[in-house]
Length: 330
Image 1 (cartoon, one colour):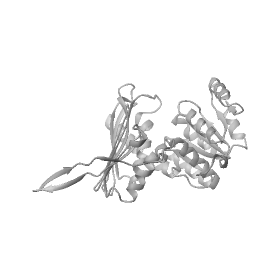
Image 2 (cartoon, rainbow, N blue to C red; image 1 turned 60 degrees about the vertical axis):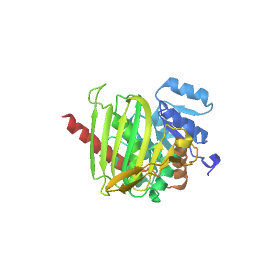
Image 3 (cartoon, rainbow, N blue to C red; image 1 turned 120 degrees about the vertical axis):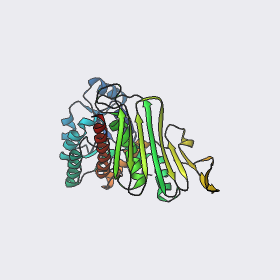
Image 4 (cartoon, rainbow, N blue to C red; image 1 turned 180 degrees about the vertical axis):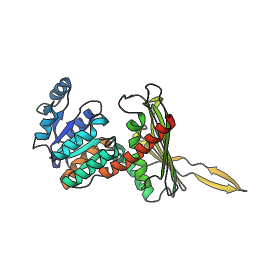
């Protein structure tokens, strides 16, 4: 594995709040953090005390003008992703944008085109693509270990963090859409969704999205921030075996394989249950893996796993699901 000393890339993190502080920590631990940019003076002061000698900036233009900064990480509310990412790319810097890439397809397409024109890295923060358990699950699916995939479902549920600028679909579901598209290796031919707005008008707190693929795979994604307990689970049902990736479990149980089978007895299907087998996976922080990947892509001029094109595919599904929600609300 590449050592920290090889990541001599200067990274600026824009937005050091709820999620941005985790990105700050990881890039600092990788020895690549150059600047923290945030509009809150108190936040900058706190980080200056925590990381002495680190550059801080309240003005985003300082980041754009600094020739030493090679990559910019955008951890702002989703409505700002497009405008800030466009400015970063225009300034000739590589960019890592937290999910979703943008709120409109035309905006995301413009970012992808600009990154290609400038020959710069455009990466989207679809975190779970860098989770060791999901990476292993994807390998098992691609190797045919589960057989033909019939059905996939995901639950991403908790109580909070409740947002006012985006609904639960846009806040939680991008991760699951990204994983499902990676497993299926195709785009859905049909997307539908329904949900409920209980706390705020026109902002869904709970949604259920259904995806159908040409290959016959069917999926559903259930997300909610009004749920009595936390659950982050992806279930893949094949005709040979079934897999469960549960990120709220301890490392030894994050990925389980079930060798269940169905036999026919006198014309009646009978389920033969098997105990879950724990699959050993590397214990590493997904976010650090993701940050490291961004640095490697800058170093090697390599296309990220979750690049702009992948971000576009996820955004397309999000918009189709949102359109379906709005139709049902009328």
